[in-house]
Length: 152
Image (tube, rainbow, N blue to C red; front, side, top):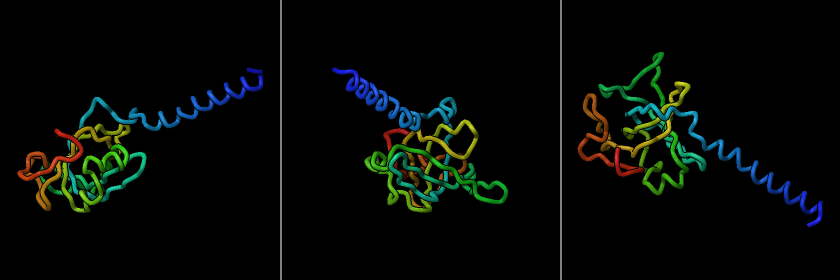
């Protein structure tokens, strides 16, 4: 191999190696606190079927089943998941979570304290318009449906 071809080969190999690093860094969960687990229940605001990570957005419900508020506004919480294609295979789609769906999920919250977390459990979906009893989750409501995994 002559010097010019070798240089092109080395440059291509380095480009492939370094070109993959941003993608690997993007998929890091370092921004989430893996030592903390929050169990949250809320009402679907939206489902965003993005290619990199699908996202469910909810208004949080308190243990009494009422919407939690901060500064007079509903507290909105985002849940990051795998790609839209991957979660669709698990039954997690926009059709399965229309606005108003009540569900519970476990997440690792962001280290910054923002209202956002990474899903770490199946999603327990309450029957339509049925909130869990005080202090319970949708996983404890008769007729609930588990999506995205076998256990809550």
